[in-house]
Length: 314
Image (cartoon, rainbow, N blue to C red; front, side, top):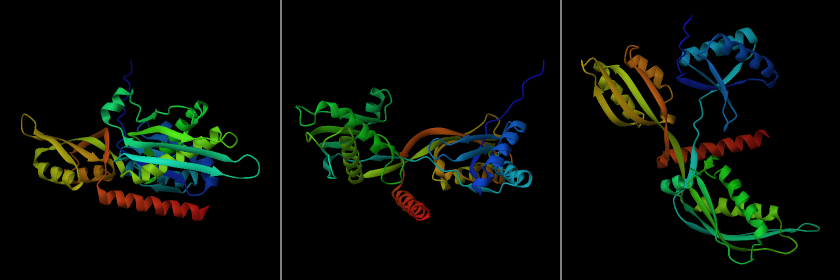
């Protein structure tokens, strides 16, 4: 019997899109053909950013296919740096009291909600079956009629879908609803949902908000004569070295480190050139942690600029 071919996991990814939307058909055909003839080339659409992500065995590998797309299918590709999926959270407890009022002809909209937002600990998330956010309803009496409770919870979820700093999903936040007010004519599910979303968004902006970034567990194997360069490169990428061991006969080293994903771009090429092509590494997702303050400022600034550019284009 023939043995099955070993296909390694891709080590590098880049976002691609056709330069013109008219090329979309050929772009799809090209990707289908390339992935069929080369099992080490993978294509997926990112759930969060909706970009087409091309993954392969290195920068050169991906460049070849982007060039072939141009030559064989007449599709000019625009490639980006792969985007990192950030998250957002808050660092403090903050009360809110928000009124949503809209008066148009006929029935208006009216809702008022009071409560607070607070950080949710890792332990609480574990107890809550891994739900990254929590909604707690402590309303007593009928100031908010009970049929609007589910709308308040939906409004909370709306607010969590996109944070105010970099538009990333929000996690590790508990929203507590304590009280509110309704109007017998103008209150509705929509009014309470909208009111709650605005209240929570506004509170989170003021509750010491933070951006969280994915940190990868990186494992590097290389000949031991390159130990100095390998360790220096990890430090330069703001990685934290967990262990650095020499194997039994002293010929090779294994370095295990935790490195922010955003700092890993271009690492495959750097490691190869540092170790005469003998070094290799693997990385997998570990956790999301808070970014350092100056990085947070840069990310917020870039997000604002991108939003402004989108608005102008539209």
